[in-house]
Picture 1: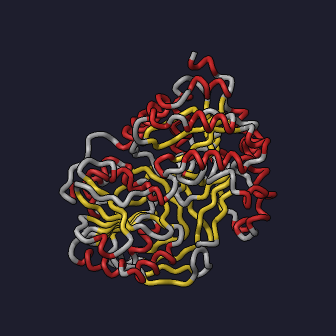
Picture 2: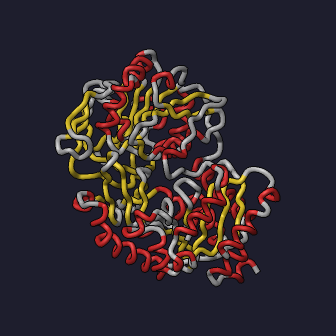
Picture 3: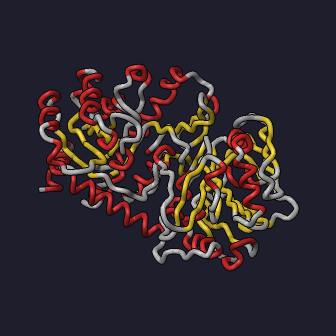
Length: 484
């Protein structure tokens, strides 16, 4: 199990890398995270929702994503309210429960899912959340030491040394745990190290003398193109290349939809949250959101809505993805209070309107057909892959042209230089991404996105394997022969 001294220390990164490291040595490995809090969600083949980080870890392990790998997903809708997704399905009755009352409903699902994965695997690599040392959360824990105790897991505790205070964080976390839980920590990992590792002495030896726990990895900092789990991991962007402004919404969701664009040579995706940020942009992208109404109101209040409309009037292409697609229309209404309630005027770049419905659409789409409209007329007849996660139905208005459809249902519309779609991962389709970049007078790379992701997983796996004591880690779980 990979736990951390805090959120954002690289637990998901390390877990994905270790999944690929063991899988390459012939181990049937499966990832697991009991509870994830993130609006970055993936959809499985049967329409279930799970954290995208666990979907990536499944890919690293060479297996299909399965909701049992992330039985509980909390999707923040507001500062004090989250949508509880249990075994892939939204459960409003659980969302209504007080936090402390949820454990008895969620813990059985966690243990059942873990038992099924363990029965199907040679090795399960579990990931924790935040820190295991938060004493106010210990009684309701279902994701950190509760899982480690239940599974008798060997725990690697990681710290982000780039933040500073790593040794204090590791020691403090260990010290705040109960004695039984301390015994489960079998190794410390210093992640995102910059500099000469020899300068760390004598701190690792001193830490081991105080705790009895060795440092089993010093992983140098590396930039990677794997999806981030949390929006705070996003960089502001900048640099050389075609500037594409991505709106950093307060309830930003599925922001990794822009990763294929950011990975393109000659393209610079910059995340912005104020009107000045879109100045000089060659295009503007409004990503997904878990609260369309609240974020649409924020766009108007921040001045971004007016600025985007002005840039669109001047000819700058504007793209909306899922919630961003809903925002592009004339109006969004939430009569059932699914998100923020009420209704709000949209940006009016498309003429259609959206009404949020009680039912939630979650499905993988591999049969969406590009129609001969909008910037993708050259792709007419091509199939696109992606997935949907959204409440609501969008009705096209006068002047809107459906450019992507499946089974008679329009999944996106275009008008002028604005276009949008409900299809997540749309930029992961190489032909579409290249065609759109060409309309911006930018060429697309020859390498396909899926091949790039595979290469990146292998690269970070090599990086982690080279900088962690894998023979020692393998011995912790009775797999020492893999590195003998």
